Length: 614
Image (cartoon, rainbow, N blue to C red; front, side, top):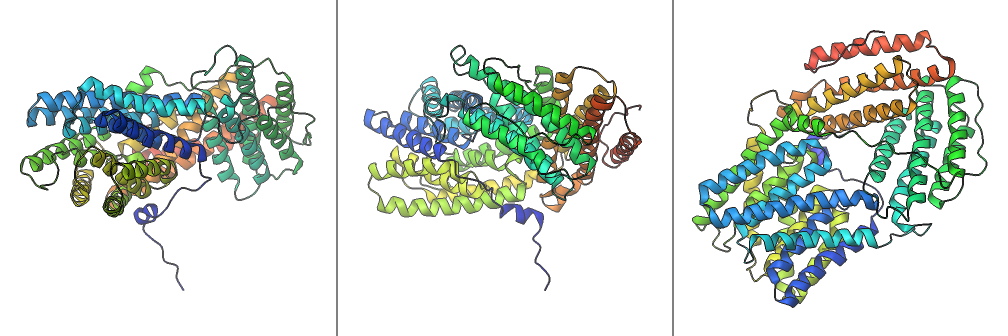
């Protein structure tokens, strides 16, 4: 019997993320959203309490596994953007008529959409800016704009304080403030060991990609502000040094994977013992040395020796390479083809949603509630490409909203007010971190939570109206998503691929130049693999779009695969040059072949690529 194969856009909508439950985030969600709403009710400032609870709820969506220092940026930056959006939306809603207000919101959509192309944190900030601008303009809050903005910041700040102060399970080995950093660095050593185990097998490429993801995560975990600058300086330097010691190990393991010859199980034992030492905050102890039978194995042995020395020096360490996110790079992402295309689509969708919502509001379309924020707020989440392909987002949002509205309607008929609603809000706040595994699930939970918060303020139950507005938002985003725009479609994917090509070029030129600056080489290698992983993610999402959209990025996956081979080969060249001082004919041949294929791929997808003379 033939196996049923679902189209990519439907398969993506049915797929959920896997992994362990992040229980500490669940506890923070329960301690943040519900208590803030209860504090508002108890103090008589119900609206302010609801706004603070919304701030904590949106922060909970971004409360992902990682270090405390990274959470300052991951939660704080979007929180500041949300407060700004709330203030602008409130002032605009109070002082502008429908047409100027729509133009203002459209301009905000253009800016927020373009800024979202910079990266995940910027994307979350753009989303919160627009969501809270819609709430401020369409919800008619009783407080002044600045008071509402402060209440929103208080909600985000409360969740951030919980993240910084509460210990997480298994974090009592040493200073608990560094539990996320230790786990992230330990995962890098485990990923190196897994790649060494897979050398010569079919899963080597997958393991190398997992190693890149682990390195990216550890780099982000260590890149935020120090929580305690002076008292934690020894632990700080130790973690930085342990991460830096993992870079040559990762380089040697990648070179072995490129060579394709299996290595003994003994080679992976050293990295695994280092991973255990990081988690236990202990010294490395004796490490089994691999057989030095090949240049890459000699490089691995040397890297293990250097790592053992680093682990035994408690008070010394090296600095951490921080990703080069300069102002120029950010401006280029905003003004590039990806930023322009995304900005125009967000602006058009958000502006159209605001205009239609106001028109329906003035016409008393639903007859139940005086607020019109739901339609443009829903559009913000639907138009976000980093939340999945368009069809998947629309299906998930529609299904999640219908389910959430029906669940809330049943709960509203049974629960006492406001105590029962506060309990419901608390439960939903705890479920948000778990529900983020699937867009439909988080939509359902957030729908119940928001409807409960609105009812706490005294508004009537309006589940049917929310379902209708959500379906209308789905239609708007589907139409705008397929409209032709100035420039070439798929600009976001091509822009990320071009950045990955430039990073690979810089890495290759540095290695072939035989520079002795290994720290710079590792920094360039990290940037090459990281930008390539980001391009791969964008390509995968684009391939899962409806055929009318997916065809605009056809061929980009082949170019990414060639880039991957080029960067892997460059890494193998770097390791071989370190040990022997020269390249083999195989290295030179594969570099030439990868560059030739890259040039051919450029012709197919019209993406820029630099040539390199060997």
